[in-house]
Every structure is written in C-alpha cells, then in structure tokens.
Image 1 (cartoon, rainbow, N blue to C red):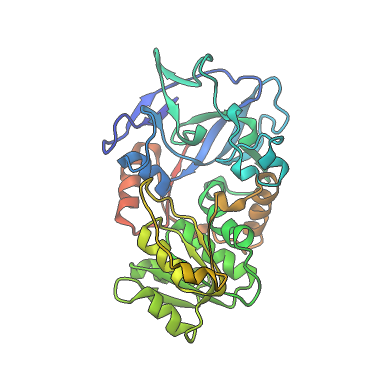
Image 2 (cartoon, rainbow, N blue to C red; image 1 turned 60 degrees about the vertical axis):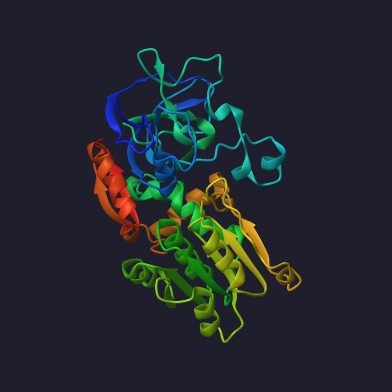
Length: 362
C-alpha cells in the first residue's frame, strides 16, 4: 500500500510503499476512505511532542473493513467504521468506571516480540496513536473500530474520530453544559468549532468565541456563537467580563494548549465556573492560577477525547449529523489526495482552515 512516512521532524513526508501484515486474532484491516489532518499530527511532525520515527501520522479515520482476525467480534468485512483513537479494553478499572477514553489498552499495539504491523523490508514503521491513518490501509485493534450506518458520508465521518469527539464531547460530557449556561471557547479551529456546535446543541445561553483570525470568528458564528472576541486586539478576560456584566462565564473551553490561554480560561470564570482544557500543551508548559479563586469554587480540569464513550457516543454523533444538528460539512475547508499530504500540513500551519481532509479512492 501507499503511505505517507515521516522520517524526521520538520521534514516533508514521503509517499512510500509499505507492507501490511495479516490481521492478528483481534485485529482489523480497514481500507481507508478519509482522514482528517489534526494539530496533534502537526505537533509530532515538528517535534513538539516526542514520537519514535519513522512513523505514519494521522488519527482521524474512517473507512471500510476489508479483513478481520479470527477472534474479532466487533465488526465484519464490509462494515463502515470510524476508528477511534481510544482503544478501550473493556475490563480495567477505567473501563469499568465508565471512562474507556482513559484506557491504556496494551493490546492496542503489538508486543515487542511480535512482528510489526507495518514494514518496509526489515524496517518497522510506527503508527501514530496506534493508527497511522495517512495510508491506503490501516491495521488496528478491533476495540477502536466503531461500526456506523452506511448512509453516513465517510469523508465527514472521519472528523468524529478525534476533533469532533473531543470538542463536542468536552461540552456535553466533560463540562456537562446545561441549558441557559454561558460558555466561552478559546481557539476556533476544528476542535473549538465542534465545541461551539456542542454548546449550541446543549442549549447554552451565551456562547462566546475567541480567536485571533477574523475568518475563524466568522466560522464560529455559523456554528452557533452568539458573541465573538478578536484576541489580537482585545484583553480577552476583560472583554468576557464586559460581555457578562462583570460576572464571568459558567464554562470556558480552551482548545489551544498554551499557558496564557489556559490561564485566561480560568480567569474568565464566574463563581462556581469550570474551565476545561482540550489543547495539547508542550511537556514543559506550566500554568499559574490564583489560589484565592479556588475558594470561589472555580475549577480547572482536563478532558481526554471529550470523555467520549466510543461505542455509545460515536453512533449518536453520526445520527446528529444525519439529523442536521452536527455541523461536519462546514468543518471541511479543503479535500486533498494522499499525494498532497505536505500541502495539507501547510494548510494547517497557515491557520486559516478548520480541517483539511485526505480522501482516498475506493
């Protein structure tokens, strides 16, 4: 198969021929239909987050099951699937507690003594997030495969795998936004726009979108923002306080991962408010919050994959899209073939797209 290989940080990916192993007992071979290009992929490409190389990036994936291992029960050949970047084992303390999104399932990857899933000659090729979606096929553990209805367009479905599950899920699951509550979303890329969409569906009263790019703020209004703040010209916290009569917001969603924006999210909260961080910060990023604010019952929390329960929530998100409530078409700024993978990353660096989607011929 053809795949985009990252061999060095800050270097172009190369399209190379990769050999895919036969599916193991609980593995699934999926013929890729579409893969979204996410900022987490960019973090690996530029070296902000460490990852062994060479590797295939990509973790927002949807496709059609081609082959399954002998013990696979979750899906069958011909099924249309979204591949979640969480691979819940189903029996650890996190899974038993209803938090399969936190599961570190060792079976998601092959063990050290096993042959690699992907290789070029004697060289093993890694899979980012145990997926490696920038390839014509992916071989994954069955626990990440969620079967979906076949009338769902797969180039939209792939976005649910990460960005939408993270943003939309953070609002309805991690933060638990209730009708009438106020919320501010910092960062209006794909994840932030999905959070705004989730806030609108949840019935939030005031939805404040914050970004530096006018094009992103205009998109935020299409997704349900009632107010926008240009972070390049305004003191963000002061602007939020002005909009809320000095009270602050009940919820703040941070979708960037920078020290300053995380602190802003916390500082714009009303009493009893909750700031939820979705952005992937660097390992050495530290944040400072005023201790006195904790006595006003303000909270700062993280969210991993939006607290999504994959087998339950992903099919529901598909149904929301088919009902016209989940905005996926509007998230796709551009579609490109695999041969234009480096141009897709350039789209991401420019910051003017919500999502570029890599599409494959099927």
